[in-house]
Amino acid sequence: MQKRGPLPRAETHPCARQASPSGGTHTSVGGSAPYRNPHLAVEERVADLLARMTLEEKIGQMTLVEKGSIRPEDIATCCIGALLSGGGSAPPVNSPAAWADMVDGFQEYALRSRLGIPLLYGVDAVHGHGNVYGATIFPHNIGLGAARDPDLVERIGRATAEEMAATGTYWNYAPVVAVPQDIRWGRTYEGFGEETELVSTLGSACIRGLHDGGRARRPEVPIAVLATAKHYLGDGGTAWDSSRTFNIRRYRIDQGDARVDEATLRAVHLPPYVAALRAGARCIMASLSSWQGTKMHAHRYLLTDVLKHELGFQGFVVSDWEGVQPLSEDYYTAVVTAIRAGIDMVMVPYDYPTFIATLKRAAERGDVPLERIDDAVRRILIAKFLVGLFERPYAERSLLPTVGSPEHRELAREAVRRSLVLLKNEGVLPLAKDTPLIFVAGQAADDIGMQCGGWTIEWQGKNGNITPGTSILEGIRRTAVGATIQYDRMGRFDTALDPGGRPLLADVGIGVVGEMPYAEGLGDREDLSLSREDLAVLERLRQRCRRMLVILLSGRPLIMTEAMAHWDAFVAAWLPGSEGQGIADVLFGDFPFSGKLPYAWPRSMDQVPLAVTGGTPLFPFGYGLER
Ligand code: BGC
Picture 1 (spheres, rainbow, N blue to C red):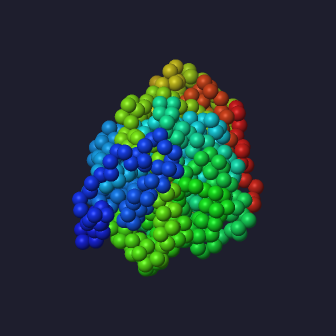
Picture 2 (picture 1 turned 135 degrees about the horizontal axis):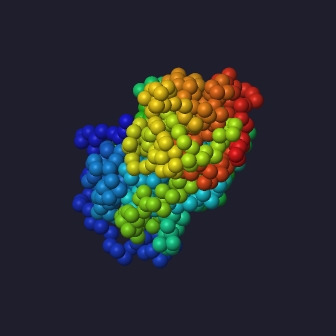
Picture 3 (picture 1 turned 90 degrees about the horizontal axis):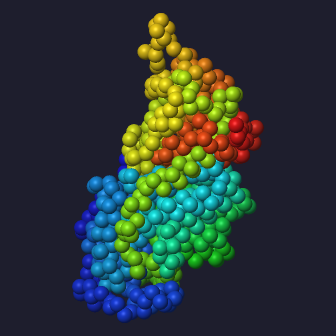
């Protein structure tokens, strides 16, 4: 499933004859204008550029369009500020070079506009440049929360920024700095953990890494890739069944309502943004959720009074996907409400002609003050200058070899090793590389798509060989060189018989099970029990091995209290990404277990959400054996 949209209808086209003040064709402003001079201070450049802009051009800069909906010539005529690829919205041939060609192609149109203001191109590179075939896929944030190392997160940020810059996508809708309080939420894995301080530390490390990424090559560019702290505010604090969003089916908690008081909102959910600002954040995405019944996209107090005035945020606030329409049944009112509340750029993402025409009408009527528009555009332009877009609008193709490079994959493999949390070990681990016979069972053992999870190649992720990587099974085979290894997805080893025809018993059984890929509200799940299919696989394997180890791939803790009694060892591996080898590195003792739980692990569904029930979990936050 992809997040991409239709082309707008031609009759609603708003700016073909309007972008140039003379009303004629575009005549580019010459190279001598102060805003084009990289030696001037950013403030000076912004002031000069803003003074030259028409209202239409300003509104264009406030417009963010999904690339599948844009008519390329409109980028120039409407002075469009930014494009994005929604999850899975790749070029027809999904390769790093094709991405660079596609983004550069759009950029050419932007540079042909009257003022030549370059586009920002945004993607959700939430665990590496995940839409791009062949990119390095790092563990999702939940795994990095288990690894608990800001330096590691910063290095991953840098590597991601390099792979992004190679394709000209200089804007990342990451990191998620939600503090998820209910693991039934389909975005639990996008958060670093349930604890505010952990999220603050790792979220700001990610921003530093993305902003710094490969800057050694271009010290004159203050921000390598623009990070986006999201989703402001309280996305991780929404109540079960408070969501009204419908997409294929009704969401249950994603985009719901955070029914907490202001003290809780400030204590639990706000600090990661304070940390993000300190780390230099220049972009924050508003949440599609609500606080006490008011949608965040309409929340002037939180967006403007708290974020911009109290905390002094100088960057721009981008709305989330179709976040403006739901504010009112009347689109005009919705646009006015959002912009007045403090949204600076609108992720439309489809029907931009209507958005542009609506905001123009609102500005002309005075319903949106011109000072508000200028403030929004100033914030956007500052970010563009800091990213150095005027000096390097195109993809940095010299970085193409870094996409999925051995160095980046090695970093991802290190992250996998460090993200593993050992929850039970009764004399099984580490395994010997010359264990005579090992049975491996479960689909997750040999499924790159499953180990990557959502936001990989497709919005919802996908099973199978969706991108190059190493499966867990391959890692085991490469490492346990002295062992005989047999794999059966269903855990049926019917043909494994001794010379006398009796069933062989493996010395070790490794069951790898877990959740199928999902993203956002489609991953909201009322019952987090391990599936019946998985339990059946593990039961079959149990019959055929002396000692059994279970590895769980999941975006959150799952309920397995009873089943675990039959296992000798249990490892939570989260959503490790493309480098499954990192798991074998630790199983076979080349590296130690060091990960700690980023979420408390409930004993039963009755305890969920633990933040509310206050129950005693099966394993507390921070738990993790070392051997
Ligand atoms: C998500 C955002 C994401 C955006 C663009 C939205 O549905 O909530 O996190 O950045 O889509 O893909």
